[in-house]
Amino acid sequence: MNKMNRTKLMCLFAGIFLLFSCADKNEKVENKEDKQKVEKPKIMWFDAEANFKRFGSQDSIVYYLDKTKAAGFNTVVVDVRPIYGDVLYSKTTLMQPLTKVGNTKIERDWDYLQFFIDEAKKRDMKVTVSTTIFPVGRPSTKEGPAFRSDKFDGLTSIEYTPNGMIDIKDDPSKVAVFLNPLLPESQEYALSFVKEIVENYDVDGYVLDYCRYSGIESDFSEASKVAFEKYIGEEVANFPSDIFRWEGTSRILGKHAKKWFEFRAMVIHDFIERAKNTIKKVNPEIELQYWAASWHHALYPQGQNWGSKSYDPSMIYTSWASSGYKNAGFAEHLDAFMNGAYLNDVYGMDNPESIEYALSKGKTIIDGACKMYGSIYALNYDTMEEAAYLCLKDSEGLVVFDIVQVIEFDLWDELKKGIDRYENE
Image (tube, rainbow, N blue to C red):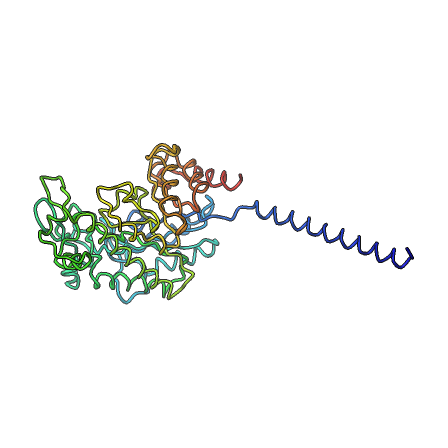
């Protein structure tokens, strides 16, 4: 072998060695990156009603945003439309400001939502806005738009009770006056303030709250009867007893009960799809989110099927679920579902009353159709560290409801320990 060929051969071997060395180095870098955790949403909820007085000043908001950030949270939910039906944002041509909750009166000359957004962004935190959707007042105190304006006459839910039919406005036992979700006027009203908010505020997410029927007693208006008959393709001879009848305070389901529950769930499904389209048309980057209790099987009275269409509850719950109920699953229309595991026990895969069970069951029900965040109730203060840790470990994010209990029971350290424990593993 001459000198020139030996030189070429040595260069070739050197090149091959260098190539494999670089590949090995790149692989190590990639493996290191793979092991690094992607930061999950850690969300603190700021309820409007419970914190109405506390967040009446800007200084208080700043103070508690700092506390929230220091505890490891990177997102806040700002509730701006509680059940009263009035709002805590200023850029509106539709709504009236919320100035009174209970005996507390506050008239702000500043924009509550905008201030939260500005201050959160300074702290590199995201802001998700929350509004109730179908409530328009509080029947126990006769407050809210439903009692101020006749535009809602004929739109509020009609309840079928043991004592007969009653307008929900006249039922002080109910937490809120609900519009009938079926009616086009109800939906257009709700979509108008949803659109107004996403057009005027730089929010990262939107949570639909109280986006449901009030309860199993609603809605038994003539409009709902006609729409249901169209849905099933036949006349209901005995309404409402073909849905159910009362015997004392007990309900006896009728022959159309299952299809009725399916029909109502489909009303909510279709509205959520409309809300998604409304929001995404304005800003596709805004996450559509929805909170509901983790006990999916008990939410059919409110028309809340937060599951995937692939999950068929009729295979398990034969007493109330039709074979078509699964088609009303709206998880496919969400970016994220907040799974309300408001339970005392943290661990126990065989314990239906544990957070661990609720998160596992939630994954089965959603079946990958959207992200799922574990949502915990801060009133269960004895288990905050473990609950926060578990939600981050077993779901795609953490939601803590509400800051009022975090403050009351001084849970900042417990929450931080749970968050740090997960992130340092």
